[in-house]
Length: 210
Ligand code: TMP
Image (tube, rainbow, N blue to C red; front, side):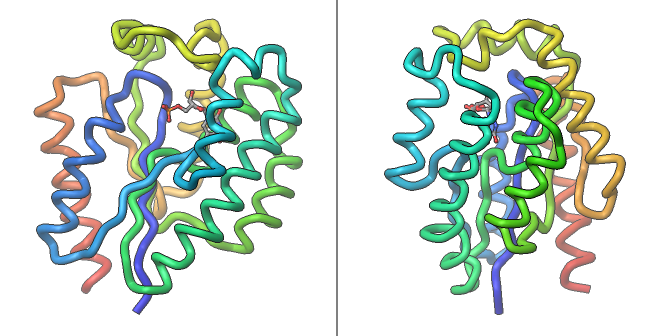
């Protein structure tokens, strides 16, 4: 029996990383063995690439370079962590995945989605998340929340328009594949978001087992 890949994604400030621990607990309560991981990152090499991507050394990086680095980290992550875990029946809960590339490098930086799709086909060989929870909220609110968290990384320093484009791409993708995506209204208080996430997951798990 293979495991499932569940992704949480969305623009900055949606609280996805905070809610990840809660999602993990819900899945474990349901009897699943879960590993939690993140992108870019999730392996030693991937975390090193993450530092390049988010840190000051990446200043002025070309959008193609940025996209290739995202997929280099993803290839390593899939090969070393995600595929082996799924094959052994574990569930993988991943903080961001390829939707972030379409949103940030595609929407944000203006890279052609066709180029991203080429890399996606190459690196993922058909593997797609079983479920993506999109934590959606207005950009201004997300940035205000993220701003309270301290020093901004290379993406967090982008302007509001960059995140507006990224948010549109996320929403377009979620609406295009309603089977695979659930949109969570992340503008609300954490307790309300948690209840919605719990209900969404319970419904999804029920359908999966039924
Ligand atoms: P976060 O995981 O801490 O939110 O930060 C990762 C940053 O990297 C975030 O600003 C989004 C960005 N990112 C991309 O631009 N493309 C990608 O494919 C991924 C996975 C992340």
